[in-house]
Amino acid sequence: MWESIDEIQEKVQKVVKKRRYQHILGVRFTAQAMAMCFGEDITKAGYAGVLHDCAKYLTDKEMLLACRKRQIFCSEVEKRQPSLLHAKMGAAFAKEIYGITDEEILSAIRWHTTGKPGMSNLEKIVFIADYIEPGRKMLPKMEEIRRVSFQNLDKAMYLILDNTLSYLKDGTRDRSTIDSYSVDAYDFYRERNGVV
Ligand SMILES: [Fe+2]
Ligand SMILES: [Fe+2]
Image (tube, rainbow, N blue to C red; front, side):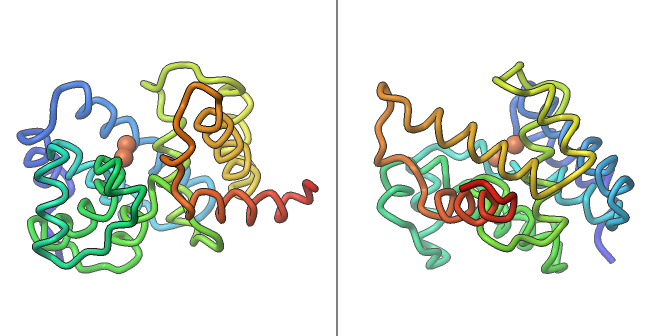
């Protein structure tokens, strides 16, 4: 078995900034509450929540170097915006540094930023908790998304991806920063929700 969640949480606290740590706590408790709601593993949701941003403190240069060292594939979008890699690196660190071997937890960390088609419930929970945790600023439709998140995971996925992609597609931002997994996830969950 792994170290206790509280021991891991203390270690993470030492490497991330205070604001990030507050966010991490918010994601831990939100993911656990959602796991209770949907009958998923509360312990796994807690570990994934605590560790999901454990690589977020790396600089762009360190992130690219860390990926190269581990032969982790970096897409063109990720090379342009290395902070996107914190999800992949987070999963790698969770295993290497924090000794997590459970594939479901590692995968929930891996996919928490972009999402992907056909996610597991734990993956969806961590993705959604990252967006709705109480410390997040009020984004458009946040109240509705928070409510739906405890009713229908696929619908919450669709609403969040719709929000995120329309934000990224806003004329003032560079379209080349949109990860193709997010687009695929959006198409998948839009169809799931019968939106044409
Ligand atoms: Fe993140
Ligand atoms: Fe996060």
